[in-house]
Image (cartoon, rainbow, N blue to C red):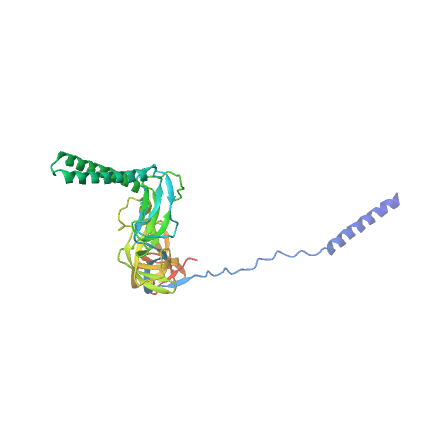
Length: 342
């Protein structure tokens, strides 16, 4: 027991020494490192120096040659059944050619019989006039019979003519309806369209009439066909288009301009295309900036200028707005530096 009491303090001292020795072996913790000082990136501004230049607002696009004289063929009465269409797209026709017909029933035979009846009346009238005086009542009756028969023949001939669509011009077939033999025709619905190739104009159709703002009759047009340019003049705009009862033509004219081109080569035909340029506004030596420099907010036009090391907003009044540039009428002076939008 005495030995045990003597050994216990020694063991305790040994354990304490071991613990202290272990702590001495642990690495010494370093203090927290301070974050490095980062210099903020310097803002890079895209600047433009205001200067005077020429500016033009223009319309460019691709236009198509179309006939200036067109014949729209349709039936004036509904109910007839289509018998045959005698032409196809691209066919050349002459004035007087029958291009389509409806069923005639027995009209052909009735016209022929009426012509025979009139011929008989003529013979009978000639015999009566040879035997009797001109004031004889019998001759008067035969004259009236002749007049009546002639009116009946004209009525039958008109009915027969109404079964035919006949060309009124020399031209080319540029439209045919999808009617099939046996289908009923509808009054005043376009069946065939003819175009006169000798009278052509260049037609430019925009997405809407708003895209043609500023175009007026008489304006010059630069027309490019392949690698050559030709002079042209605007001869019709949506505002100058004549009234037309055909809705399709009305809709087309509402967003199209017509151009007369001079000096065209003989190989240009309906359907060919050309590049056009129409300058609607032009000013020389005015304040001009890139469109990227003009800013707008709530209807306010302004620019940002570099004022020392800071930005400054200046209200401006714009003029001509071109594809990539804009005229500034008020607010800026030559030499000022504006900040462009990135």
